Image 1 (cartoon, rainbow, N blue to C red):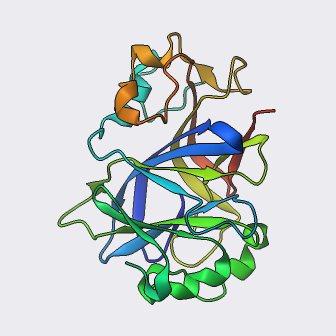
Image 2: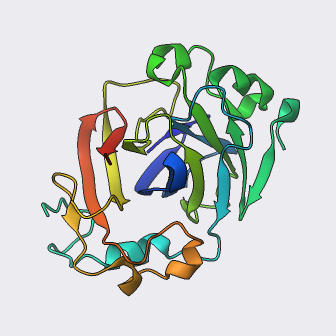
Length: 247
């Protein structure tokens, strides 16, 4: 899950990550959410300090809504439910990008949130509770309230420069009502490509990504000639981000 500027209910979070060229990283994010108002989804990302406002490249995957369905199809299901654990325009001049059904911005630093409309910021004082993000940048996606019920959003994708080129980053800290609990309930499927060695406690796809993912439709996000690794996090966990070593 991630940070939201207003009250939401979220389920079925999927995140894909892969190292890019020159120390950059691809990230794809999707979930189902319910909200009574328009909100912003805020993803803290470990960009180098003083990154330029165009440092993040947003990628439109609106036409590949089945990205994560296809990703999961590469793993034989070992249980009768995918939900069960398996062992195996912005104010102040910030650049705004239309990404499919979303409007997105890169916020280079915490101080730059003042340049966003108030409804798309977190409450005052929240970032002081999260000193680990002092040097981070933020990818912000503005989401319209669902017309009815729960809405599944198409994958949100982007590429960003990493401050630490040896770690693949997954934004999983939960902030949904202005509070930062020590533990939080997770409903996550994490996917990654990191080379030939599987991260500890992650499952490896039997086949290469090109055998179950429409690689061309990912616009360079997925390496078709590599395996994919998968980890489920369902239950209560320490409320923190996930990192995978890549070097």
